[in-house]
Image (cartoon, rainbow, N blue to C red; front, side, top):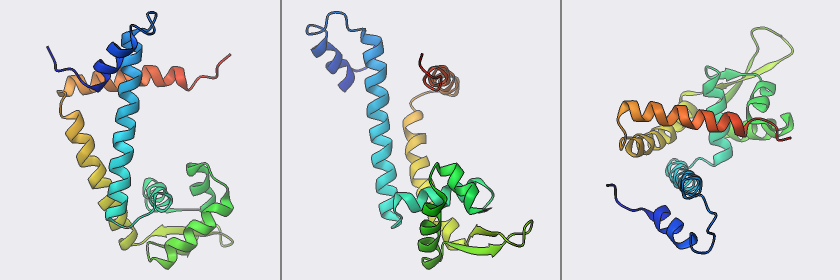
Length: 165
């Protein structure tokens, strides 16, 4: 038998108040929320340790995901923000030496944004701190359990991503 956690105590406290409460649904949702908050805190701490505000990290992350170079419009689309917001972010990141503007190789009228070595290093430092904690947490599961968890969460998220009628 596994040890009781916060959520087990939470469910036990609420069952007498809400007799129709499904303890498995409440348990899963409460645990997902607590894990999300924990990982958000870890991310915030990691970003603070490398002096990187979240919006700057997100921009560097979007660039890294595109091979280290992208058009501002592509960054805006990846981040789900207005192109003007990307311009302001890029201006700040240029001043910090984390990115540079370079001519596009496909369109002379366009300027791309590229990660510098300093930008890549700041992004990697934050990623490593987050990744270490993610591996620590999921290290409680064996590889087959991690795959099962990922598959189960995918099924739940596919429902969440569908429009509600």
